Amino acid sequence: PELAPGDQQLAFELDRQHVFHSWSAQAGRNPVVLAGGKGVRLWDFDGKQYLDMSSQLVNANVGYGHPRIIDAIKRQADALATADPKHAILARGRAAQLVVEKANLTGGEFEKVFFTNGGADANENAIRLARLYTGRDTVLSHYRSYHGNTGAAIVATGDARRTKNQYARGHVHFFGPYLYRSEFWASTPEEESARAVRHLERVIESEGPETIAAILVESIPGTAGILVPPAGYLAGVRALATRYGIVMIADEVMAGFGRTGRWFAHQEDGVIPDLITFAKGVNSGYVPIGGVVIPPAIANRFDDQPFPGGLTYSGHPLGVASIVAAIEAMGDEGIVENAARVGKQAIGPAAEALKAKYPDLVGDVRGRGCFWAIELVADAESRAPPPDDVMARLRAAMLERGLLPFVQNNRIHVVPPLVITEDEVAEGFGHYEAVLAGVLAHAS
Ligand code: PLP
Image (cartoon, rainbow, N blue to C red):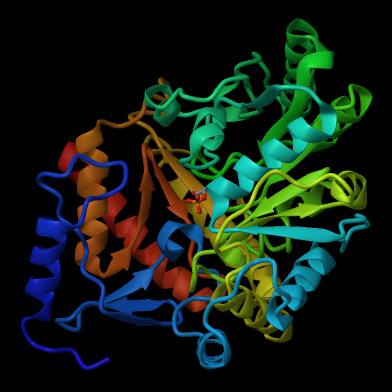
């Protein structure tokens, strides 16, 4: 777009004056102004460029300005920009077919998709399906998790955002694996995995298996710290769900659609959940949309009995058209494979090198594909998080250098668009290293 002089300040001031923001105290905000983007680069109205290591909220999987997705949205808008979910439109059926195809890549039997407006209502409806299917009430989910900001999804969430929003009933939390800060006194991934599964079984026994409708887990908890589960953990959850007739819901809202170098993160673990929720990367967030992937066993329950749920924008034409284009483009352009390769050859080694170089600042690194966390500590011994002002200074320094970061608590999440090259990863890590060195220089 044309960069009009003056729009930088206008965008900033209008936002400050009139936009009420998520999860934040409204006064004193200092938003980054964005005017445009292409690939992994963004810029403001003054022409300042940023290398994007955030993918916004970990959703812009194909990066910015992807011509095929934009063209598909334009063509669908010209043909029919809105349509009642009960009518059949070609793009909706095709989008559902493509999502199901990807969900079945490692042997599932998924058949249908219920489209939603985003990730929270995908989880909301998956929980509803599980409750209706089992005739049970309780939903188990991780303490370290984020599932969205609606009635049941926010109470299923494990982090502190839940505690201010406890308006839904029937939610119980349990601890998942996190070897660096093990709840189970484990010192190896094998111990962590086995003990976390045992803990979940004790929770199921204690709550009463016959009361539990669903176990809802992010295949890799994202916002909570990109907590890649040790081998065997998801299989252990799957086995418990099967044993007790509980619906296993894999929340793939953040981890899905290539983020981890697989179409779905759980496919790496050889596990097939009962329901999958998705949003974000399915169309790189070009239009808000999400959904629940459903196998016949659950979908058929509603062949004769109506499903008691719906949304005006379930399968919105612009959303589904963008899904078709995004999935086809990701396939044709090898974008999922690129995420896997860049993760193995560039992000992983660079993160490990940072940890080796700054052991008293980088406590742990972990991840897969373009989904990595660099966990910072005050010192290697205590593993205490650095003070908040250190994280704030790091973020400001990264922005100053032209890197758009994703900073969460005491972590830098390395979550660029999946089209990033190895050279661009090196550029990003050059900035990370410079700002970490700056923190240490400041401390000494
Ligand atoms: N589930 C996970 C794993 C997420 O990361 C998010 C958003 O960050 C959600 C659900 C909620 O998605 P949305 O914000 O689209 O409602």
